[in-house]
Image (cartoon, rainbow, N blue to C red; front, side):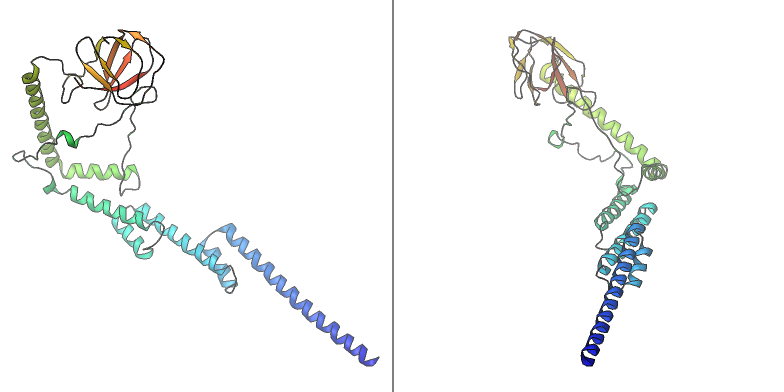
Length: 298
């Protein structure tokens, strides 16, 4: 009995020791989890560093370190963006060459470099002695200004490039305008001269090809007055590729996807109007709300 009692006591003591160790481990895990939740709640570099100092061997240590790296990069990017200079973005790349915003930083640095080149006085013609060759028709792409209901619409926005906001971009533009006022004035004079020359050439070409022929809608036509007329024959609706012959001899072809089906109208009156912006023309039929984008082919 004595041996049995001693064995029981030893067993009880061992259980107590294991229970104490288990409680300590549980308490440690509980403190670790609490510290982790606290760090996540604050979500700051300081909070995660505090967690790492208290629990360097934690299974969450890698996750905490990764978040610290992300937060440090975000701080660096915010500083670079606020400064809005090429040097600031270069400094960011030194610290975070493979970071989330590294490619954006390189793009902005390149934009600064391009801006410096384009602002160079050598890039702006001082006189119009040797102007560059005019663009050919193949270099021009007509903007699509068609809207949902045939209404011409256009969206415009400022390309900020390397600038963090419109205010900085506007300030830089005003600085360059003041610095290169003479060169810009010469460039404007040259452009005005080119416009007059090309307009005169277009008028001469029109005169040689048909005297006072109405060239509205044709390439290099100078008139933007609407065309009023009547379709010869039956109008059976809109569809991409359809041609419409007017009583004045003009032939217009639809170039957009506007559709109008199930109609038939003999010799309807039409109105063809130019877009507010760009070189597009739109044909509408009297009595119908839809209109189609067209180009004159004859």
